[in-house]
Amino acid sequence: MEWTGARYADCPTVEASTWIGAPPERVWRFVSDIGLMPSLSSELRETEWLDGATGPAVGARFVGRSEHEAFGRWETTSHVVECEPGRVFAWAVSDVDEPAAVWRFTLAPADGGTRLTQWMQLGPGRSGLSVAIDRMPDKEQKIVFVRLREFEGAIQHTLAALKDLAEDGA
Image 1: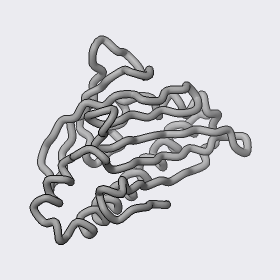
Image 2: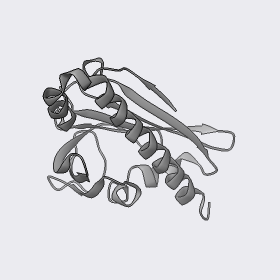
Image 3: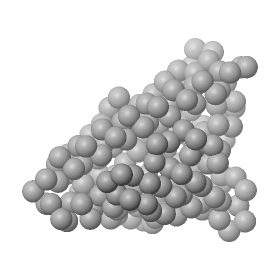
């Protein structure tokens, strides 16, 4: 696991990888299925493609409904910003130019399987975390650190679950 940045304005990131004993085409089926993601997440409760979209494509949008004990319930609209089947799937949360966060899966053939990496970046746009920082600016680094640790655990869980799904029957 690797992460960078200590202040929100630094657009801190978290990244982790795993090897999966299945080809990228099989892994892609799972990472690009937004309907599957709520079952792999402790926060994300529901997803839905918007504007008649039925799958990932650059420019497609989807809504995500989430819940967290410290932040309550919220809904965001994400915009697919990268989509290369079998290679990369990424989306910007809320605003393409000033996203609250950016999430990305990258897939690469490796040792007869797939190297799957999940990466996320906080900011630069405002998010629920910004509200917490506004209320306690002296605790910004701690707030960012705690949230990055939560994302670190979530990413590790998601990668392990995707590995299990893709290798099952592979």
